[in-house]
Length: 463
Ligand code: NAD
Ligand code: UGA
Image (cartoon, rainbow, N blue to C red; front, side, top):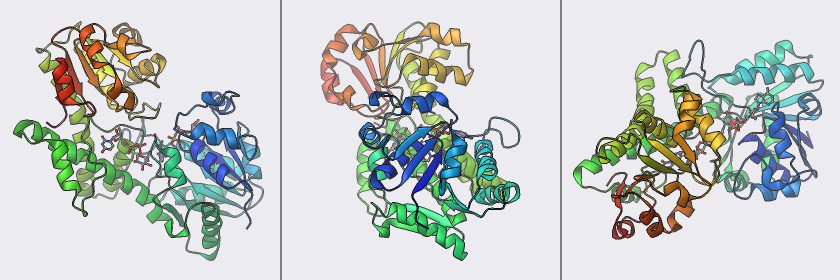
């Protein structure tokens, strides 16, 4: 089947950038991205390209080039489904906050709603692609819904998980390590796989396009995230041992990373990993393992999360201990709120948890992040439900520039590795702070010797 119309349900961090790149690389395909969030769609359609809802280096250029040509953002979900030959489902799949599996399982209600809507609306055969990250065997449930509530048309379900990382989404999409497509082993399933392969082959060498069965594809996505997160928890676990022994985690990571069997990526010790997916996907993996009574498997992976929580907690504890066991009414500056640099995404950011712990100790917190505003910061804290919105708001100041944020502060904590932090006038910052002036570098970003020379008491992770 020659594909010339596709749509994507979900205009978020995955749906938006992924479809923009497909539109750029496949000018012969009309790509429509739909969402029930009207505000988000309005932002994608904003005349001022700088106002698109997701900040990713290079994204606004691609959206500027394709929007209105063959890339469209709309709230008319039904029309887009009806027109499209391939429908990508890229909606959120958060951890369940209620009922069975609360706090662990993936909440599949948005996926099911999409499946039911597709079934109701589709009047001709469709290929439905799972782009969201889903528990293994979700395709079975989607197929059941489509086949039992549909209009008698044929559906093929493919799993095509997304591996992009935020902050590098565009380059990851343009030059991915691999594209994974899982489908049925039947001739119809293979035909559907071929249609999707042909789209990606417009810019990706076919050697990098891997095809598997549906279950392998679904499980590979959870596995990839679990392995990546496990490396971070492993290096973070050893960072604590380094702090006790005089070893330096940066040197240890360098030494082990040169072993080609280990490799050097994802060995950066930090205040703890954040982001919308690592924790959610591992919890989901743990839940699946438990549901098959694989308790040792579940416990093994759960430890990755336990270690990450410990890393965030001990960072906050260290600040309190170092500041003579009290931060009550002291001004502490957090530089960075996003879960990593080059994104405005704050989901599960370590900064939220560090701030929450410091607020429990009655610190006054001032925050500066180049891409995150006060509204978002307060919403993130409110979501934890540790204290009232008003109580958070009274203890949190947000600043539009780092120098104001640091003025009069007892300590600075670096929580996101934004490049600009390296180039600040640290002498000017030092002079404006209370003494002794402390820096807790949760990203091992700054130059220790330079800062010590200025007069700071500098503490990094793992040394
Ligand atoms: P997101 O929350 O940014 O976007 C999801 C969008 O789906 C929202 O705008 C929401 O309004 C919309 N939506 C929900 N239900 C809908 C419905 N019934 N009809 C229309 N729109 C609907 O989420 P995201 O970060 O883009 O993640 C989406 C999926 O991709 C998740 O499963 C996630 O695990 C996976 N993933 C995310 C990343 C990432 O970097 N964020 C990377 C790889 C995979
Ligand atoms: C991660 C994966 O890298 C993607 O492949 C995957 O598609 C995505 O999750 C997803 O499924 O959502 P992302 O969370 O956007 O991408 O960003 P990462 O670069 O993986 O960073 C995650 C967190 O780990 C960040 O807080 C980052 O600062 C931290 N990190 C990363 C470290 O602390 N140390 C490292 O060495 C690497």
